[in-house]
Length: 259
Image (cartoon, rainbow, N blue to C red; front, side, top):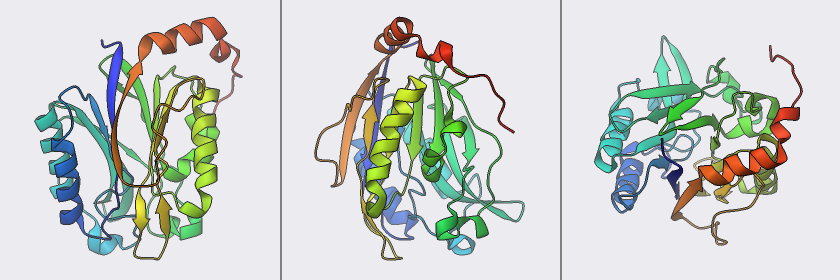
C-alpha cells in the first residue's frame, strides 16, 4: 500500500484518426516522465480523437494500441489508462483499459454514449462500472459523457480516486470545469479529468482544462490548462482519510439501488 499516488496528466492535440502518430506522440511524452510516476492518464479515444468511423479505426482487445499500452506500462513501471475504439463480437465499444505494470488489465465500456454526436448509433453502451485496486488505492475510471450523470459515479465503494478521460468540446468547457469539481466534492474523492486540445476532423474545438481536484474541490493543477501540457500530480491518501474522518459526509449518503 502506498500513501501517495503519483499521477501523470497528459493533455495533447490529438491527430485526427491517426493511431500511429498519436502513439508516437504519447511515447515521447511518457518516456520523458519521471521514474516516480505510478499512474499515466490519457484522453478518451487517445489514438484517433472522438470518431464515429469505427469500421475503419476499431482494433481488437489485443491490437497494436493495447499492446502499446502494455509496453508503456512496463517501460515506466506504472499503470496506464485511456480509452480506445474496440471491436468485439461484431459490435463497437468506446473501451477504457487500465493496464497494470505487469501487463494485466481491467476494462470498462462507456456507459453513457453521447447521443448529441450519435455515438449511441455506432457504439454499444457498457453495463457495468469498474472499480480498480492499485497500490492500495481504489480507483473508479469513467469516460467523458459519464461526467453528466452523478448517480453513475456515486461513491458507494469508498473509492479514493475518480477519473474521467474525455474529448470534451470547448463550447461546453464551463460545464466540464464545474462538474469535475462537483464530482470530487460530492464523492469526497480525488477527481482527475483528462481532456484534449486542438480541432478534430469534424471541426470541433477543444480547449483542454484537464485538472486534478482533491476531495474538497481544490484544484491541484497549474493555471495554464488550455494548451498541451504534461503535469505530474501527487495524491495524498493521508489527506483524504483525515478529511473524510473529520467531516464524515459519506456516512450520511442515501441508501438506494441503481437499476
